Amino acid sequence: MTLSEVYFYMVIFICIGLTFFVIFTSEDLKDEKRYNWYRKYFLFIGLGGITMELLGWNYLCPINCVLLTFSPFLTVNIIKATTIIFRKLFDKEPYQTYRHELSDGIWVDNKGDLKHKNYYIIYSVFLNFLPVATVLLAYSLIRNHFC
Image (cartoon, rainbow, N blue to C red; front, side, top):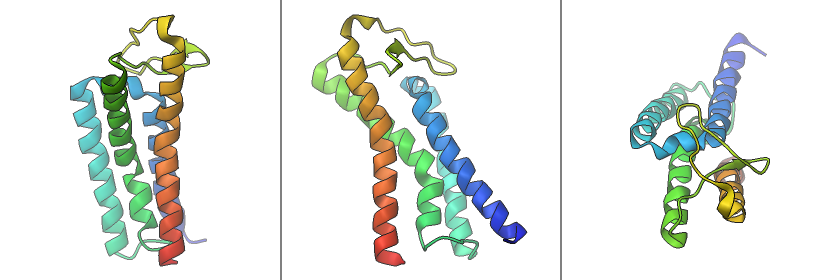
């Protein structure tokens, strides 16, 4: 394995780590200012993946590099869409839970109460499952059609 490959995989692992960071701190995305900041920052990282693809610095199947570098951006938008859908469908503010306790973000405290515990658990399952499932599904579809 060359040094170039090590750096490439290091960038990919950092992007995947950022994806999980966003999932675990999704309460921060309720603040519109922070959501826009995350979106711009992760879009910039995704554009780096396009640049890597155009320069031929890709040791995966075509387009998978772009998908994995855009995964934090996709995750931010999927989480925000999930929050909006739950808010509109059930007319309640959803809050993420972790081990049956309310989960906080880094900058935003969770202000929910455990009165609607089952609703929060269902919301948390969707919040954790949808971004990962979407990226894995897209990854497998790209792998089946482009490799």
